[in-house]
Length: 242
Image (tube, rainbow, N blue to C red; front, side, top):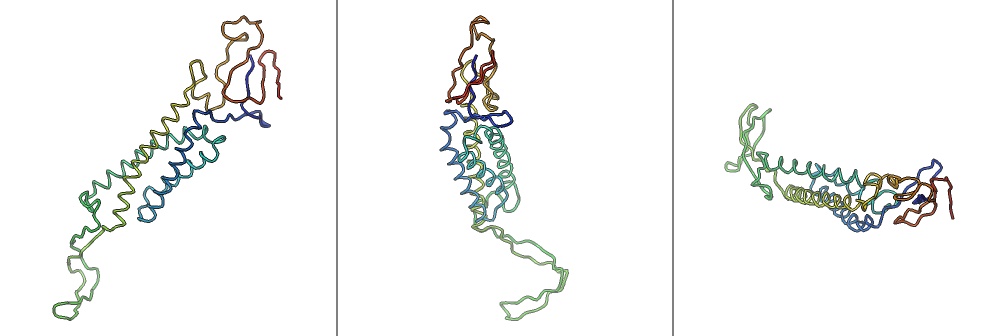
């Protein structure tokens, strides 16, 4: 049996297989995800809502690296990328539920740029105020209870809430996209399995003579999807390179 080596071997004897065509067809989608996450990162900085900015920055970096260095990173980064996509969905869903459940600003003010409310506060020190009706100022002593107006809503909070919803939708799409990539790595019948595809292993080896062949029938060539640069025979052990 002859085993093809997918690429040149390094000094330590290891080898790196390039991603198969079934995985490379997802490259445009990976680039699109990177651009979308970069846009969300920019919008989160503009709105001042930085709760998910690290996730957006991480996803931007990972997707762009997987796109620009597909031969080295796409197969090795796919499983961590998939796990992080599903983790982002969970984290963004919890963040959205917490935002909608807070008492102020409430869920009714989710898209409101103004949500003024009066609250009773106690002055810690004497404060000078100006009376508009009498056109005079006077000193309010410390420890006095007064009503103050608060308004935590603005266009920044509206933009931040929109980014939160868009981020959750993008995370769901990215998780579905990553899962499709994982399913595309499933080998045909008789292949070595998903983990062997990621590790670059050709899969379980048949007997010396190959399936259905006697042991002394001689070596058998293994058909691969990539152009091999080197062959190694198992029995007898012979390394042949062009």
